[in-house]
Length: 447
Image (cartoon, rainbow, N blue to C red):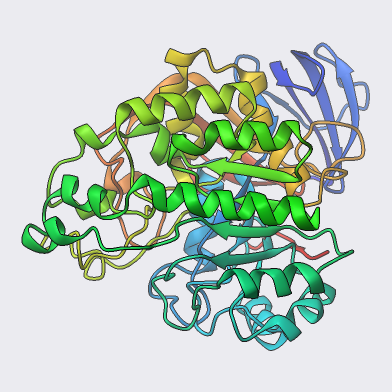
């Protein structure tokens, strides 16, 4: 790869405008942005005239599962799939690796596991569990970007869920760090799985087994704690639209809260999900069309801050693909490669613009993870991370297009619009239509 080069397009997405610009990249940084088709330095010149050049996508919600469950995914395949989807930075969740990232020793093991396999940039979340309050500050000093907690069983016994008392202790010890506390919001009170026990292949029964009020009650708790402690708090993968007005009101009061949703909650609707198709199982579940229409409204009006894929792959046997048993199947969507395309495809009906898309996928998540001075924008001095893509081109999702370890996806057979032509990470062409072109060009992101 050249040390310096220029990329050009008529559709470069800058923070202040979309237009024709030439971008000079030197030693992995953006060193100049010139209006029009210019290359005054006579450097190697890449002309993407009709394609969109956008900041590289930042995905703050990814389960890579390495070390310990690398047969589920791993940094090599996970970051390859990310690069294929135009993602240049991800943040890895503290589970489902084994052991989970709840102390500095396991963080160091995680960092060691990335060696030679990191094709895009990666940061790391620490975990909050009932037993590790004393480990949180050391983890913060070791460089994690924030802390994730579950308010219900995580699906992994070594990452137990927290109660309000544990959360309060975490807020107390993390005062002054400004590192966000992230919460999986379901408070699982009562039993609603009787129908699922009788018919474990029924998607309607699975949806009924995880009711909206579980989410709503958990969101209300996190809003209360965020307001009490005035500490950055984040709701991951919001699926229930019932909480949107509460969130809007909290934001108006100045509560330090951010909220994400996921592409699968916006692309799919419960009414269209066939029975016994465990590829669609996730928690919280994909809900009804009327609910998801409200999520779209909130995404476009700013109530929802950004998108995270919640990429959570698992081997076919664990997904129970052979039996279609929704009660026993692992709950997780494999989708990091398709975030851009799924969002753009469905967003056309809602007036989703390139400017808003760039905010949702690039600028807002960069701010959330604390790298807004380096990433998420095309600006001089910023890291040279880009996705170059065609908003007009379409493709059919087939298993041979997927770069993840296991070719399991609810998007299989879907026609998506928005084709990634190239992904540049730290000034290196990492992905083109020919495949992975450079390996191990990602950087560790530690605070």
